[in-house]
Image (cartoon, rainbow, N blue to C red; front, side, top):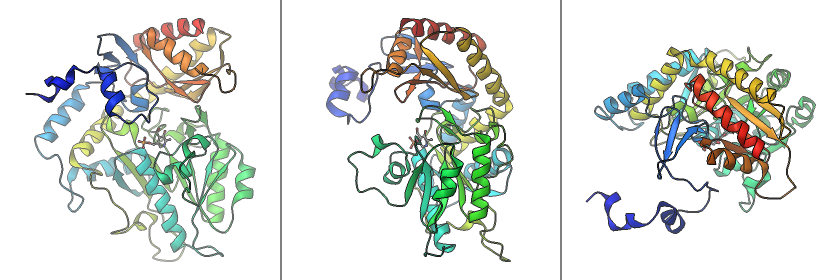
Length: 427
Ligand SMILES: Cc1ncc(COP(=O)(O)O)c(C=O)c1O
């Protein structure tokens, strides 16, 4: 008998979760049962426009024919081998990332999530700091920013500039300091002999859709060069075309020419399958002749992941990235984003303070609620939209994120906007 038809399936999904699933997420009370294109259906058959996409995970929406074909073909060929051996999809994916997404010489490490991709960057900063020590010995400190989010592992929450993710988990990993966002002078003042890297999201997602300014990013790049620090971008949420560029920071005016030392990507890269990646520049670690390329600092035995870059997920990610490019979805993200922002602003609704973001990573900033009061304005708008058939995602208490698939149609955007308008008016 199929496990789903056995007697225990008699429990409702909400009962299964209440009894058997660790309650670490605040979940909305609907069960998503299937998806197609920009739409998902719950168990009761109600249809929703998916402007959450698993929090920026499904750039091609659901049941994309090319993705389904790749999954079928690769699963009939080879699901897994091991990183003891080579596999061609991983090599081709690394080539695509370096050549097409970065356009700069470098190498890629593959893992399974955004947190692991950031762990890789943090380990790279430590290793770099040990082979390029400062006046006080090995350098280990990574400067990060208030409002940032870098994942839920111990290093991830230590790097994250939000107190709520750290509560109850002391002692944290040492070697992080969180500086005010977009404040170059604060960064200048903070650099000290043990500092080895600066890690930031070019557009903060969980922190409320807050973009870095081009001048800030360029200033950080200059500081990193001056002080021999690594400039590391966490593009887990804002990368993969959503901002109107594969490499999200290139969509920020004034930051187009920056070549960081390392970049983490995850979420949208696998189209719904778990993959994370850390691109590392091949620039030499010093000006000495024959100096090691930064991309070789994590040498054999220094890092690893059993499932990282396995043939199934690597071939799916390669399909996702090449289909995003082939279908022209990246320039479209810029156009559609501008259309959404202008429409929402044209409503002049008192509930909306601002619309922030770039391309198809947008945040509607609402009037703040009473401190500590629940539900927050963001949760209220999310629930109002959900009841009308639209999924969106809160980011902090007063911001609601719109993260549609990159292949969303103009008609679907119009439908979503109509729901948002009536939901905002109902607040
Ligand atoms: C910017 C950023 N970094 C890292 C992460 C962690 O990614 P994951 O949940 O895949 O570990 C997230 C997840 O939301 C994120 O938004």
